[in-house]
Picture 1: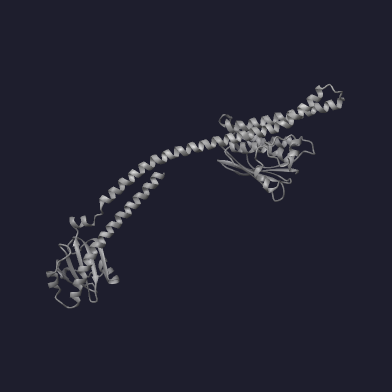
Picture 2: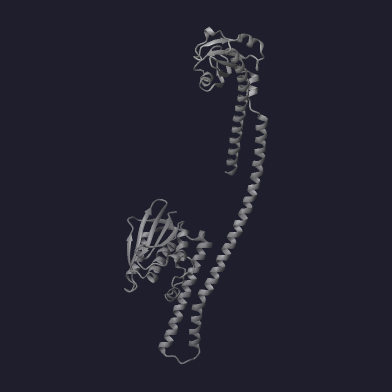
Amino acid sequence: MLLAFSWAIVLCFIGFQYTREKQYKSDFINAQLQLYNKNLLETVEEGLPYEDYIADYAKPFDELRISIITLTGAVIYDNIISVDSLDNHSMRPEIATALSKGSGYHIGRLSASDGREYFYSATRGERAIVRTAIPYSASLSELLEADWTFLIVMIIISLTMSILAYFTTRRLGKDIEKVNSYKAEQERAKIKRQLTNNINHELKTPVASIQVCLETLLSGIDLSDEKRQELIERCYTNNERLRRLLADVSLITRMEDGGQFISREAVTINNIIDEIADELEIMPEEERLTLHSDFNETVVIDGNLSLVGSIFRNLTENAINYSGGKNIFIKLIENNLEQCRIIFEDDGKGVEDEQLSRLFERFYRVDKGRSRKLGGTGLGLAIVKHAVQFHGGTISVSNRPEGGLRFDFILKKK
């Protein structure tokens, strides 16, 4: 593309140079004729015998045709054609230009009187117009022709520069690709280090809690049945948190490193929403949110059932655990052959505006203490973002004017 653009510029320049050089040579020939015209015109307007001037003085070109024309366009003298056979010349291009501007020329017009092609140049005086014309011949064509030596040199230089530029940009492209590949590898390594550090940090609390509980149980201290049961339940809760954390990390890693190996099938989004509605119905009343679904048509995409389900389930769990609201709204905004656009909202309290951009970060928590208390891994919304991207889409989050969060996302059909 860059090479084609460069050649387009070069060809435009060569075309411009060719036209400009031809114009320059035409102007040069016209200047010589105009000088002769003015000298002859002075003789005519002074009433001197112009036939003597034409016969005695040197002409700038051989075969020069000379005409003297009145300001009304009548030809009163022509050294080649009989004036009786000539019609009014006021509409000839060079004459019309001379009448309006004082002088003018015209290239390559066929003469109506003798059928030859001429280069015409006309000059207007106070009482008459003098017009000279050179018949087109090999010598005139050669004189008007552009300097092809210059143009050929320009083409050769341009071709050489294009070849050099091609190999230079090709090598530069490979170097840039290597640099970008290196940077991407470094970025992936950085993300993996951050993920590893975050996982280690997240594992410490449940592992330490399990260890304390087990050490207490194994120490031989006399414990009541209630206290023993409490320690066992605490071990189970932290073990469940570890299980969910490892499952979530495994899911994100699969999407990042092995997305091409994740199976795809026809997924009906309406069915997933219906399942979530049924799951909400059997939840305890104090935890339950009411789901309002506005899907006026069936939406089917080519995707992974588990990942699409994780989008809606993680958003639902996020609303249940942290929104403080009572309702969930899921709306189908757009559905065509290429994609569908869906909005997921809750009517809770929302978050601070400065925290919105960080909600999809791994292990980011708006309320760290409450999130850990509820067993959250801090990866739910990160999984949502990765699952949406796996399906070729994008997702954004904002606060609703009336309160709560709005997640606006697109899923590609294929």
